[in-house]
Length: 272
Ligand code: COA
View 1 (spheres, rainbow, N blue to C red):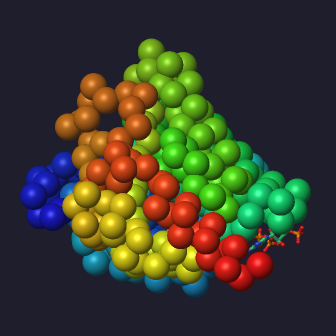
View 2 (cartoon, rainbow, N blue to C red):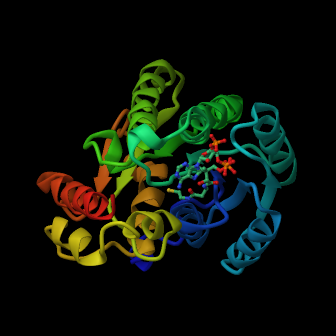
């Protein structure tokens, strides 16, 4: 799929990806590296970041990392500083770091709710704010990895639904505030994607057939399909796309989340 893009699409542009050590975020970093970008990733687990940067360098460009939990503003600021020192200022930022678990709302502790809000929403704010000066310098853009929960409530996802709705409104506000400065802001909403930690967690309570049945195309996305669309949105091909929420879900949002909700609710009634 990525072969359809010009190999020079992001040549000369540095892309910072939070949570870039694995899953959808690594797929985005991979797609960007393949079309010429140099990459900086941050995350919590050094071994994972090391392995990911090694993999990304195989595409011929530079790839560097910084260990940073997006909940820690100072660590995120430092991550932008140290990675830019090595490869130069970022021409694009992907805010992808996220946390998730499934639990009925009445069983989510304040700490659990806060953990997800802090990673997904506050973390996105930290990444955007820390990247702002570099994006202004380069005329870059920011892409948030949101989720279907921002539009369609999913049961046992009260915390994530609240956080992702916040991420999308943050994105829209930045599109208004930063657009006049030449910085675009957008988000993507991936549907179910094969081979991700998020899907593994969600799939634990509703089997793959329920998910696939919710998608008009009848299957999960592969990681490459999400990465390729993200690379396009970060590139000049999307120069007039600002404040947009791009849904990459095979049409799942058209049928809504009710099949998943019913499967999860009946499983929890059966076990209670
Ligand atoms: N059900 C209910 N509560 C849960 C839970 C679950 N399955 N998993 C964690 N929590 C609660 C914990 O009990 C804790 O609350 P408490 O102090 O009141 O007991 C709170 O969440 C924080 O948990 P902790 O493990 O200490 O936080 P953390 O900062 O290490 O991890 C999470 C953050 C909870 C989001 C964790 O799931 C995580 O690190 N996820 C990253 C990976 C991921 O989710 N990937 C998918 C991306 S879509």
